[in-house]
Image 1 (cartoon, rainbow, N blue to C red):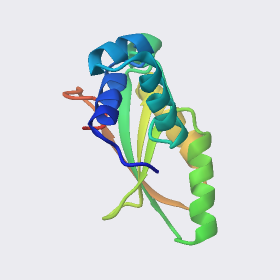
Image 2 (cartoon, helix red, strand yellow):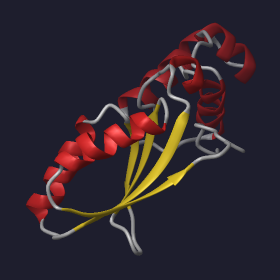
Image 3 (cartoon, rainbow, N blue to C red):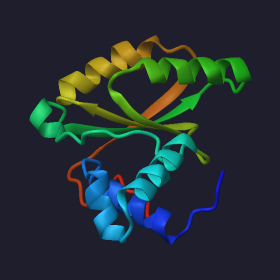
Length: 153
């Protein structure tokens, strides 16, 4: 992987603000011509620094207004059990994020659902079907103060 210079960092900053910017618009903002900007962006994609481009959707407007952080402990800690847990979580369409954490819990899930009844259904049917869960502790989000997808550059 190549070293990132100030222009690369500026490109990443601009693309994190708006993935819909054209190469021409970006080139103007970094004072380069179209071709070197295009080549730099392709290199950043090829090297996996830019993972993908997405549209950010307003959760409440698509019926997913309840955010829950669910902390999970698993009963046994073996490679096979951990791998199976990860596969099961990856298959859940309601789990938006999953982190393997230290402390009192093994995993932290960010779950987005319609309402409390929908979350209850998730706990009973989705989590309830995963073997080896020892406990689950839920924290319900009352309001979002700051939510930013951009990586600080």
